[in-house]
Structures are given as C-alpha cells and as structure tokens.
Image (cartoon, rainbow, N blue to C red; front, side, top):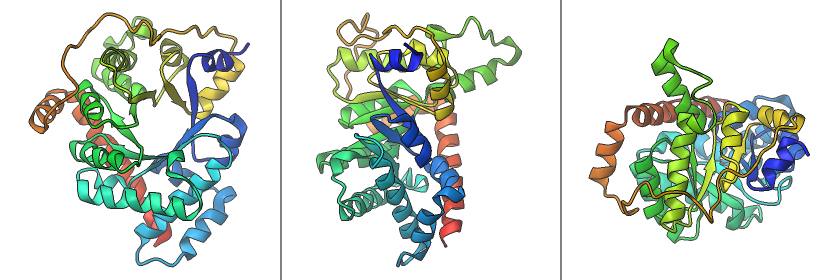
Length: 313
C-alpha cells in the first residue's frame, strides 16, 4: 500500500488545485480552489475556453465575469469529483460583511443556474471577524462555508460559534512564520511531525472541537512536507497540493492514524466556543503570527484577484 492509500483510510483527502487535468488524475472526493489557483489555471492555455467564455459573458463589470469564471471552473471540477468544491469570495471584501454576503449569494445563484445544488459547494471566506459574521448568516440560509486563512485558536472559536461547515487551518504558513522568526536558530529535525508549530496549532483546534462537540469539519491546508501530513493522519480532511499527492503516491511510508475522534486527548481549553468581537480582535492583535499571516494572505489573494480581473476587463 502506498502512503496515499494509507492516509485515505483515516482521512478524507482533498485535491488543492484548479487544474482540471490534475483534478481528474487524483479522483479525490472534494477539491479546493483559491484566487491564486484560479489565476494560474486561467493563464494556462489548456483552460482557455473557460476564460474566453467568461470574457464574452454579458456583464456590467469585470467582477461579474470573474464570478462566472470561478463558477465555470467549479462546475468543471464537480464533473470530476463526487463531493464538493470550495469557491472563494473576492478576497478584497474580507472586511466587509454585507459585500461578502452579496457575492456569496451571487456565486450560489450562478451555480444553481448551472444545475449545481448548493450542497456541493462550499463558499470560501477569509476568517476575519467580518467574514465569520457573513458565514454565520449564510449558514443559516443553508449555504455551507469554508473559513480560510485561519491561523489561530480564537478564529477557530469564532467559527465554531458561527456553526460554519468547515475551517481550513493553514498548517504550512504557520510553520513558515516560525521558521522565519528563528532564522538560523530553527532546528528542522526537532520541529518536525508532532512538534511542528503548524501541526500543533491545528491539533489544538481539532481536539477542542471534538471535546466540545463542535460539528464544524477541520480541514488541514497549506502543507510543506509529508511529515506535516503524516502527523495529522485522522484529521477530518486534508487538502493537499498535487506535488505532495505525487510524493504520497510514490512513497511506501506508513500513515497510521494519529488523530482519533473517539480519543481526542486531554482537555486543553475549557473556554466555550462563544466569543465576542472585542475578545476576538484583542486576541488576534496579540498573536503576531496570526495577525501578520492573515493580513498577508488577504493581501496576496487580493492581488491575484486583481490580476484575474484585469484578464476579464
């Protein structure tokens, strides 16, 4: 058994790409996209027909064409996976609850016009206070949400309180920050696997959710190596880039379950999921890693969104 099959025995493996050929190749249950992945795919000549259709679509402005392009990729992906696709709301709206709601509803309406039921779509929103507030409303409307750019425990508590469908803690980006801070003092061997900062962050959240009966799914994201993935075998879902899926498929490394919902481990956090805006903002500001990585993620996704819009204008 290769490592990918072994991992799939305890975890739902999700493919993290908008490349339709790679989605077909891996035959995962679900697929995730983001502005950077859509931009990369839209620039690829193999997907030129989707871009040209969006460019020619009747629309009042480029944002409408972009949403049509996002949905076009999503519809194609859903023909290749049996489960769900995550489609991200314009990252530039990450601090605007009303605008996020409007764009999320439009994405769902565009999917519906293509005959795609909302159960097969996760609307992806940044884990800002405003984004989580929008997700709370969308969930109440029956629109499932994937809260992304999640870097700390307070973001996860707020998502649990909002009863979102799924969260995506960014394991690799958390570790990147710690590695950069320590510089030459970073000991790679000592901080692998269960001692990896990103792994430890996700594990704290996962245990908290299981101990408190939170139904929100936890999907690890942004992996840098197989050690991070192996340390989280048994997590609800893991979304993995094609390059690492290749490594898993070529490896005979054992992938025993590390996370067991029946035995989540010792209670670390007794705090209830409920968290108000002041507590959320104070905690996020106090966490330099989380505040810096959230701001960086929104900035980078916004830049790629802008580049995509220029292709459609």
